[in-house]
Image 1: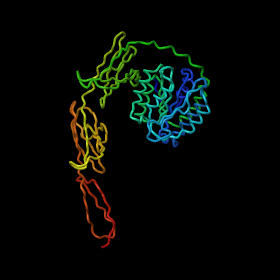
Image 2 (image 1 turned 30 degrees about the horizontal axis):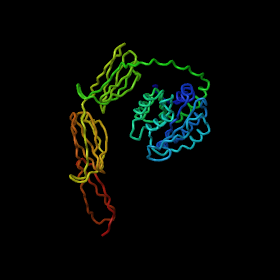
Image 3 (image 1 turned 60 degrees about the vertical axis):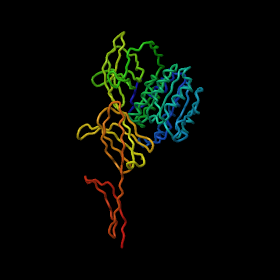
Image 4 (image 1 turned 90 degrees about the vertical axis):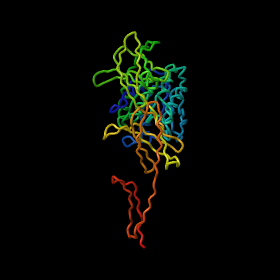
Length: 434
């Protein structure tokens, strides 16, 4: 999977993909268009939906009619509905006018069901019977409790030749990683489009260039191997239980550059398996808050077995009450790890509710918790022990203060100040004349 960062020539790769790469490599393609509510956000003073519509219109206007093109959108009809996915233009020849009409009418409203949209697009393209190409354009990550990366891997595994090319439009690093993984898992390309002005400039430039580009030769088929030469498993401890972890394989290019070769997950009873060329590599493995770097070598004719010891973890379970023995309340909890006297590192954040505890799994160690309910904050130190659940019960114990002032012609402000001189609460009483 090739990842491309688009800045001043934002769509050099994107336009060539739309106008040349898809036309030469696929007989049918489905554009999946993000119409979630966040598309009303602005880039360079203009709504993202307007910029994306204009870019898509240019693509449709220059599309090679020999390739069938369909259009699907999500989040365009209803708020908060993860099933709001619709094929606006079905795969049936190339209907330029129908596509342009539908693009013009897209109005963002709802959520971002990326996984369900990928699955529906793949089914529409009959991906288990035919070559299927999906072009996903999104300005945000999955918001419907699903894993788009896992969905993409499953589609690639079950499909005849399923490929997803993904364009992330003005997204953050976390979303970049999720969308990039979708493309990577299917052998597609990922484009990170950061700038609206560059998008439009690059579109105009690249469309003219691509029209003059001769057809690309069909790539030679890659030899199929039935054997993996790298097996990766992750464990909490030496000789301990196997855990689920993600693994990225990199090849060092020079002192300042590394090339990502592969990505896969290992599970509780299944190794991550990859086949890569002979050479020197390193592995970045991630499990909960642990991230481990492991150099390794792939030798001809041999299998490299990597057992990664990630580190021990325990669970923390947090509930909050207004008073001891009183009603359970909704509260926010931030977990910190002390680094030194002056520095603390936030590990995670979660909420507890009236009938549900905040539950997290974190590495063994010493921590403290900052819990907040209305204007109240409580700091609670705690320890995580390997394989154990630490239960924390937070009692906020609010107090009620009343004050009576003198008759006065001016309003009086009453303040509650802690031992450090910090104002905890403040109330202004109106003027009264007795």
